[in-house]
Length: 214
Image 1: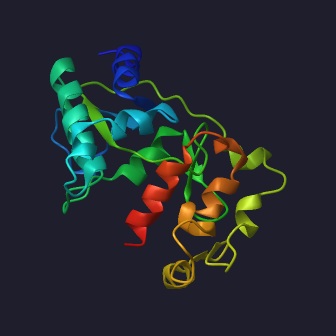
Image 2: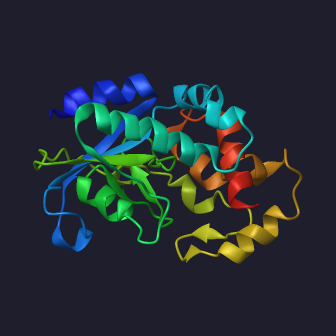
């Protein structure tokens, strides 16, 4: 199965190929799974596709994860592959390890994953497991050419910076804000990354922040 064929199927579903890598024994996968194709939202189109879906419209919990299972599961079945997801554990699939192994994700100065195209907005809705090892496509970290590194100073309370992520401080600050104010509309650190500018719809960022701070 070619990566180009998977990319075309992903784009038709509102997703994009964010990277590929070979599996390793420590991944805990079956012996027949030798490669991984990481699938991310094809933004900004993804949000309109998701919110028009039955999973979003039915009012039940976890619409994004349920959409991902249906859409990526159907894609895997059509292509004769297996799907893996970053939710539903334990056990948890090693998506962070795969992302770094792909060479298209790196560690940003604030400690988060940063992608060569999505920047700090990188996320994964699932993956397809391949019976063969894909050719790697490493790309330089966008942080290497980012002179200002605005992510390091974007958090208004210093909860996310070079010393790591102070999650309690982040939640404490969010408690002081209205739903349509500041960080409650989306993480300012992620939005500061020059690479992802204009990529994600505002409503999507606000949804993820509500989910994080529920």
